[in-house]
Image (cartoon, rainbow, N blue to C red; front, side, top):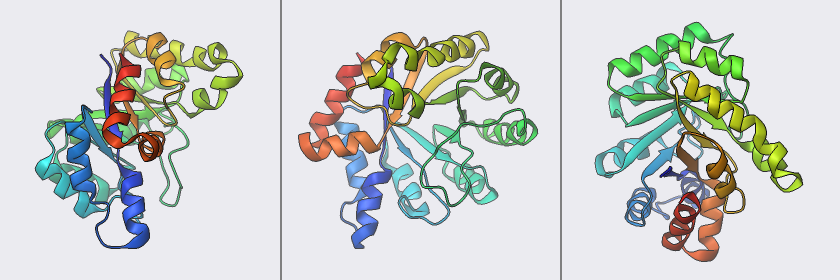
Length: 237
C-alpha cells in the first residue's frame, strides 16, 4: 500500500494567523497519526510563516510514525535536519520567499551540490528524497546524487486532471517507470486530492508514499480530520 504522509503546514499557518497555540500542531499531528496516517510532513521556511523550528523539535520528540522534513538545503536547514534526524528529508529547490513549492530540481545544474548534501544526510542515517519534475534525463541524473528516492511534483497532473486525465498522467507514468529503472524509490506530492489521488496511485508504478497537506486540511474542515484521513487512505487502497 502507498503510504500517506500528512503535511501539517496549513495547521501552523492557521495558528500563526492568530498567535498563541491554537491549533496545537503537535497535538494535531499525534491525532493524525492515531487516525491512521503513516507519516507527518513539515516544511519549515526561513521566515517561519507556518512551521517553526521549535515545532520540528517538538514533533520529533513525540511522533511514532515516519517524520519527513522538506526544505531547501541551506546550511541552517541542513543543521536542523542533522540535529532532529527525521526518517526522511526531502530536498526542494525553493528560493527563500516563494509561496509554495512550484518546480522540481534541475539536477544537471545542481548535481554537485545535491551529491554533497545527500551524502551528509545519508552518513547520518537519514533517508533522502529529491523533489523532481517528470523529465527523465533529470531523473537519471537524480540517481547519480545517491538519493534513495525522488518525489514527483504533481501540480501539473492535478491542473490537467479534469481536462483529460490520461494525458495529464502520461508523463508521470513514464517518470515512475524511469525511476524504477534507475533504482529510485518514488514519492509524490502537491495538489493531490480526493478527486485525483486514486487514479494517480492506480497507474503510476512503484508509488511508495504521497505527501498531502492543503487539500487534506481543507477537506478536514468539512468532514473532520479523522474521517478525512480515512477517506484519503481509502483512495490509496
